[in-house]
Length: 411
Image (spheres, rainbow, N blue to C red):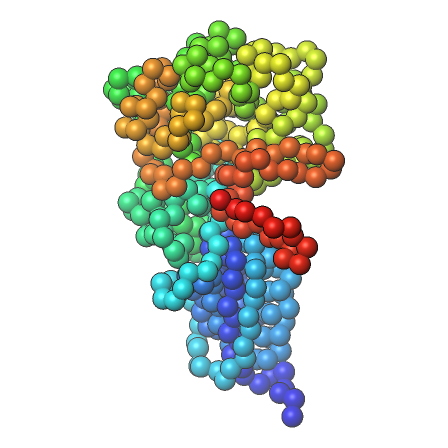
């Protein structure tokens, strides 16, 4: 006998893939409320485990919409469903994560600042105005701050920053886009900037530190900036003498430097950008994209000597957006290391390893758990080729067709 649409049932799901750090639990919370269902959802080392109960008709409509919409906030590999007898839940809740069982979930990469956070960053009426660590469930650090699964604030480097009352309210409000956003922060309770001299003396903090960094770049200084996944070396991309000095100090003879512009329109003055390349630049992954240089350009010749292409990127973190909004031109943004060395990730390490390269340092006190360099993409024959695959893409897996793939080695 077919169960009636109004009979009570319980639906258990196990969702595997990149479902942690993308607002998946808030998505399930709101979807359950929309379909008048009760139960819970929690993270686990296997992924996310929603359990909802109510009328069978409501469960079926919930599952239909879940399959249609769930893949948008994350990258889902599989969904297992089981119908059981009702357990008598009276509300829907986000439960504390469990650490039991084998680990099979995917961790999301760091994502570029979303349009909503960008609007807040430049809105003088917003409490996060000019705050260089603004983020929400749709953007911000993920892989670079996580220390262990499941992806919850106590398991990230953000655990040392206690939420202020206003951030705490946003974190627990299911109507807010920062509902369970693990890196949530504001000027009252989150990380802050510091401006160091070459000998390690703190010269300024906060917004003053950022403005002094802008002045130093304009004056031709080489600045070491602590970004999402580690330090970058910045210099005015139009200053030939400064770029040559960076090459000599970094011991990088000819390999091209990447250049960061305020946006695609600004980059279009020096390069020819196709619609596909523009889409990549503005994507949540925000990689460096190799594009063809124009015959006439304002970029210093030493940025990419003898190369018809230029590695272009646009700001992908709030800090980069603030810097480029203050500067009147593009900057070289290259890895914070000497050639062939690992990237530096904290202040003391940068002061030691980048001594003799950087003139000044703009750093912050949000620890980086996992170093991450910038990804590089080139469009060839209408297809994107990622070389190398890092921030924005890693550590998501590469899917291959086992029946068609040739033998390969991943190292």
